[in-house]
Length: 506
Image 1 (cartoon, rainbow, N blue to C red):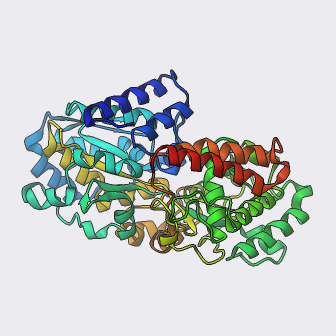
Image 2: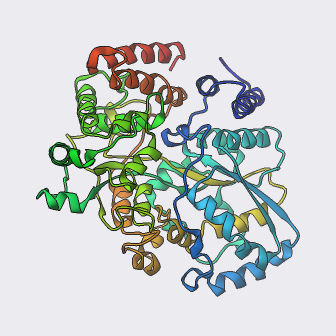
Image 3: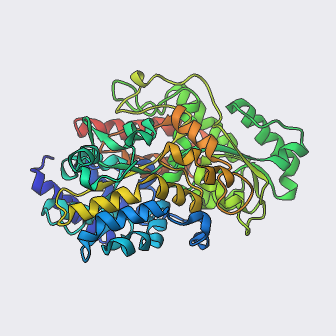
């Protein structure tokens, strides 16, 4: 199916609105998006029709340690006052930094007089609104939240922030410093064909976490490899199952993207990939099947609710003290130190476990990057059609500035986009047990810089990762089909996926 650009955007917007109003299923929506060449990152696709939990503590707002720097406030007054009375709009899903910005926007609006409307809606509505806006060049929204897999689609509709910073020195925020953004994040999220489409904004990523009290009790060292992790998980389950504690817990809900996240990491850790360089599905080769068999073994050492759990259920297993070892999203960690946690101060972060030698990027397909840390991410983009681009640009710089990004981290404990945020003394000072802890961020930075993985970059992937793969995996893991045979399951998935790829002419 081919589209003229205008027709393509109409098709995308109509499909997104149909899904938002539940006139079509998630499967049909993803199928239509793949026809139009629009993908979703793994993490984002799993959020369709849902909201992303925020576990930060906004009660800390207004404290002295989180007060805006006086020089920033003065700059906003000096530069922004000429735009007093202007209104700008920003649409986003419920990400940790967006939630914080919505709460602290008065620090921008008061000194500038610029009104800011932060519209937080489900991800499919973000796509619909952004697509309709760029299609008609309406300028209804001044800033867009863009999933990393939408960057190519919207690249021509946003203003390059690096070039704009150079072109308008009178509006340039002092010390903004584009070199302060982690290069792997810039390359992986923000740049398309040499142009910055937006500024890195959010990056959930896998790390390994363990209960130090449980490991110490059984004389187990924190595992650094898949083999050590496996042995520790099995030993803890054997010793603690009668006490309601398991070695690990999974986000293995049938038909949900979260199961795909776990599975892809298991495949990469065994030296496999999802596709090979000839663009054939390789989830059924020897390495990938080993990864799935390992995952089946982990399921046997997990709470029964694992097959009904997404990432939120997995977090609850950690938070309630049911499990001892997890290889999953870094965003889980701050909540373990919250005052409502049954395991406050007992979880420790560490670098992701490593498996067999990784399959080379050149031997994988569709831009896949096999590695030890599954990631998702997004950027903030400035609309080319904004009716108030200068005012919106001031807000974008402020929202992505060193100070604001650091304070967003302090209020939520999630991974910052900026190198200076990791090094900020306020962030370091919170690397202690307590709400919004940053004890995990040293590990997170190392992970981003060294072992960040990316799923295939192809239009059909959102559908595969939310339908064919987790649906068939769910049948295997719950005993509905395949008789426990991982190879048989993956052979069937391979036939489904290779047929779809061939029909799409990819």
